[in-house]
Image (tube, rainbow, N blue to C red):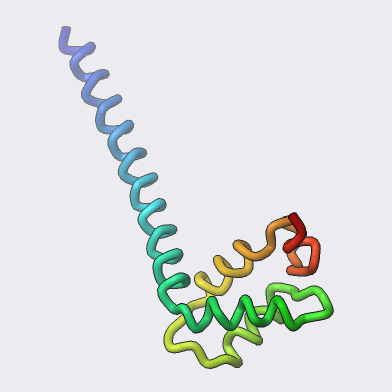
Length: 101
């Protein structure tokens, strides 16, 4: 009886810590999205950038252009989030294929 109770307690502890870890990871992702989308000037600039570019944008080139716009406060994680959001095809560049329906 004691062994069963001990196993149930261990399972509950392990399962709870995994769920907590997953929850904190999701909260981190939500925070990145909130910061990236909260700075509308960076989002607006990134969309204008996409419309005016003739060559595909790599992540580094995208990052340079975003920082050149001198956003109020944006981190690399937010720039990466915006890039991944706009790179619809997942080919690590933003080009015309990302905007075709």
